[in-house]
Length: 204
Image 1 (tube, rainbow, N blue to C red):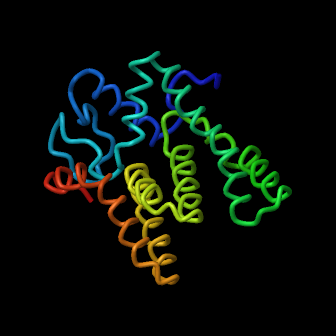
Image 2: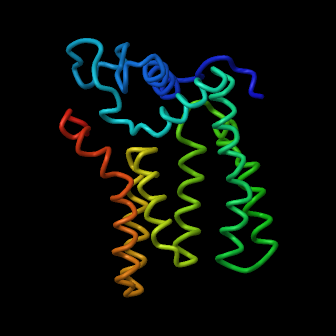
């Protein structure tokens, strides 16, 4: 298990604080001032007006199960799944075992980012896993799962919706109208419960 006993940097601390607030029964609220960029006028205040909430939800689940170690376990497990998924994606694209092996090894030994895969809680592992899943589903023509994954990507990072645009453009390029519609529907199905409430609170 990763030896750190607390979030190791700025963004991870935000998700952790929000998860603690959620577990304590305060909902998705900020109990501390994270930064002054949006001119906060008091506490508590709605959280996640910029950062999406999925990482906080995962962290809250970990806190409920086993405290901080539970948080670490969830994010390390999700990051570990990226290795076989990367290999599977490479195999689906090229049908070559050597490519699949290299893809898996690159996911396992990924240079600068290796230290971030188990960072808890943060978006690196979940986002990479979800994006790989979305691409794999699209390559296999599973447009609804691909759409659901793009929705989850948008709930993981603020720029996550870009993958929906990329996959949608790929479907349009192939004149796959049904795939485009199904992809969009899957994405909206995930985001529909979240966006209206947060937009009404002034989310970016």
